[in-house]
Amino acid sequence: MEAIAQAAQIDWRFLDRYPQHYRAARIPAHTPPPVLDGRLDDEVWKLAEWTGGFEDIAQTLFPTHTIPSGFETRAKVLWGEGFLYVAAELQDRFVSGSVTAHNEQVPYVDNDFEVFIDVSGTTHFYKEFEMDLLNGTYDVLWRATDPQSPGLGGVPCDPKLHLPGGSWCCNSTDRSVGFTGNWTMAPALAAAAHVDTSGGESFGPDFPFTPWTVPAPRWTAEVRFPISGVPGVHGGLTDSEASVARGSLYDFTVFDPSRAPPSWGPRYWWINFARSEHPLTRSLGKASAVQCADVKARLPTLLGDDPWSCYWSWVWQQMGATKYLHYPEMWGILEFAGTGLVPSRDLAWSSHHRSEEVAAVNCLNIEFPGRHVALQLFWAQYAYWQQHHTYTTSILTLLEKAYCSYKPPQNVSNYCRPDDVRRAMQYADIFALRIDVDTSSRSCVQYPTASTQGNATGGPCFSVQVNVTVPGHHTYRVNVNADRFVTVEHPALSDVLPCLNEAQVVPEVSE
Image (cartoon, rainbow, N blue to C red):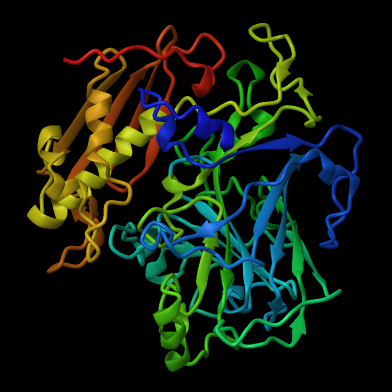
């Protein structure tokens, strides 16, 4: 991300808003994949670079409070032969665990490592995985963004539209919190953890952590995710509905990186890594509220002082003011390299368009500007609904601060930035913005308000459309509908998709 930050010019590309970006190396043919023992000492892991360090998920709200030293976290990713491999190193001077099995308890009651993946970029059917140092694991398929999302929100779900799982709109075999679905990536999903017990040290009396049983400077984790599921055997990262027609909107098998045509350039997924860190030794969510309140008074980035939310969430890609991970559109971007990464060069994407060797640098996603602008308008429209119980087609109305900065109760802008939409409007030759509203329809999601409950249907419909004409290249179209389903079309693509960081910079052309 350092190179991105250095190039973060204020122009139509919105590089100043671009999230964390990681380029995953492909395991070369005939090279053994990692042996899952949690130690990260396989030769193949040398092909992958470490991510940068994590930050507190509440950093935006508490900019002066940072993660304590000795709790650094980093991750790396490989892919190949039908699997995505993730490794993590978690500095944790005192570690503790209680969950030991798969989908019997949610491991975040322990200090855990978490992975969130949206293969399609639609924000729907994303996957969540968690594990602790005892190799207790949990995986879940979320049909839509979690409706428990605080403040700005989750999409209300219709139980008829997905397998049982209650109002959380999820499908998981985990029974510990009432999930009754039948989805899991196991047994193809595999994980292992290793605890380094070579030493450790105590904190001073001013640090409100209780001593753990096992002092340890770090623990490491390895995870193998199946990219595709096998019906009746196991799920996969590209799963969506139980039965999907080929070529339909929910056919996410097209996002398998091994199926990406080389002439299109890289394939991208949306991903985030996180860890839960508890200030108190706990067993399955039974921390003392009094103790948690005492910790939060001194270290306010603790998510809550109740026993359920008494932990810190430290993440790779910051989540603005949401303090919540269930916003897939805000995650980092995972780019799939075509071959194994070597120190300085990579035959990344060879085709008749780009046959020469290219430097092993990130190819930033050209779709980001269109997605970013469209989602600003979506969130402004959502806020407009909260106040008026209807939608508007007026973009200028939505740019009023009362809507675009709407974030109760903090009144802090998280994903809705009116100045970014105004910036796009200054590039009239590049961006074309439109909002369609059908107030007569009652077939779309009905979001909750202060006085009404939400429902999967019964609400008016709207969609946001942003057309982006890449200078000197083609035009693509981003559409976001009422249930936050994001799609991107490249109707006239005749050349390899350009990298955003290589796209032309042009002067503003106001309407």
